[in-house]
Length: 241
Image (tube, rainbow, N blue to C red; front, side, top):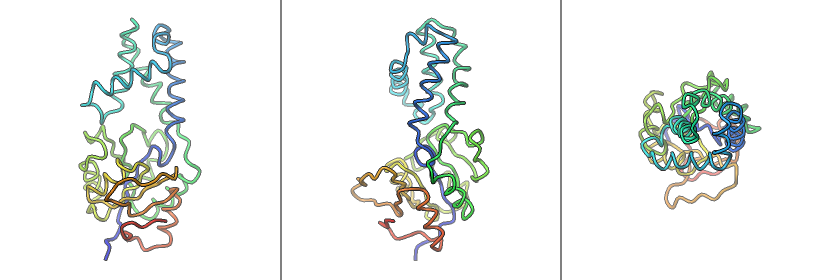
């Protein structure tokens, strides 16, 4: 008999909302901010140059891969320093970034589905990103938010999944992790002993040669519908819906 699903951990970016439009808006707003507050920085690091600087910060600082906020600050500080600007501008520039980062547009189904799911079982946010559920306005739907920065390592490290289970007070085999990314979400969770639900909005092909998601939906509403019509028990492996 399959164990009961007593709780859900949920990815945020590209599961509740698409991140690409947020990223594009961040780039635009930060460039406009630099044009106003540090024109020399804006001139030296427009668009693609700033993106390359962020990528360089990521490659050069593997110890910070779990902390996207620290990497963003580092890139801003580097841009200001290399353009001869006041490095004290890094923090207000980060604040401009963070305000935009938390302006999200949900997938059409996502918020209603999240509300339905949260009414059935405790839901914990589990993310490698730096979205702030309080600022976004949906923190009351979650038992808690556990980020890679707070935990000290990022998905698919098993420890972050297990830490969430511990905080939920639920054994891993009775927790269903839900997310869009095959490796970081589904394979990572299942390798840690959780159940895995793949939200596959793009119609991608599953690639892992051994593991298969316990549940597979095109939208988060698909999971909410499934929960509404089933006893909340973990489905058989390789179930597709």
